[in-house]
Image (cartoon, rainbow, N blue to C red; front, side, top):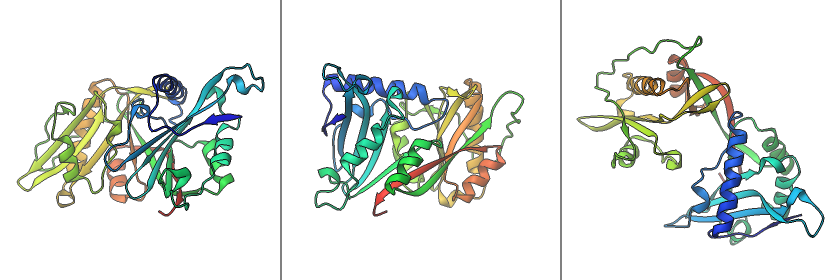
Amino acid sequence: MISYRWRPELDAEELAQVTALIGAAAEYDAEAGFSTIDARVPAERSRGGVRIAHLPIRARRDLSVHADAPWVTVAYLNLRVDSEGDGAVQFVVHPDYRSRGVATLLVEELGLDVAAPDGWRGTGARMLRAWAYGTHPAAERLAARFGIAAVDRQWTLVRHLSGPWSLPLKEVDAGIAVPASESADEWASAAEFEAAVLSRPCDATSASGSTRVIAVGDSEGPAGLVRFEVCTVPYGEFRGGWIRIAAVASRARGRGLGSALLTRALEEMRDAGAQVALIRADPVDERTVRVLRLLSFEQEETHTLFSIGAT
């Protein structure tokens, strides 16, 4: 038996429990590379045209059937609904309660009806989508059981920066000077620069205090940028660093600017102690995949976007 109730915001006790759950799951899943939730997400509130709903899922400790067993938070679902009814779902189960039917029971009880007048479970969501990072068998089984469609894929690609599998980094002349990086926290115009370069909005929740940005422009305006982390995380037996964004404006493509930006970022990540560099890419984007291959990146993992409702 599970207990749950939608919250527009979590109270102090719920926030502490959910934050602890997210931390335990992130530590447990770090090596496998499964989905994680940013620790700041449980404290978010609705603002602007975005509605935030929190769903802490509780059960009796060890799923006991005894009435005197205390209730504990065993899972957490976060729903972000935009003004068009597009609902982005993040979901995590505490490592101690996995493979025990918690997620299946939740879906059975909530249902997946997004066609109701007020959207899914009254949240206004008329479409639900959720990324499952890493080849997670539980996510695949859940999707198959409830007929949840896989609508998109991403790859994680890896490039060794040190050790016997690393290759030298070669400088790329793109005909434009590539500066050293700046801290994203100190560079107030980073978001505006990204908006000018990227072809579609990017989720900035991955940015942290260790994020660095290298951006270049020319006489016509912003030309390209790369955003990456100089802190490292466990990745197998290695210390890995993430490249979060790498983009070149369409007018500036074809002259090696993307390779030059990535090479500079890889140098700084290596000097900061990263043994491998990690990046996610759309396998359909042949241009990006080709650039990454030429920089000695290799595919490591496949991630899946599951969706219900109109796409």
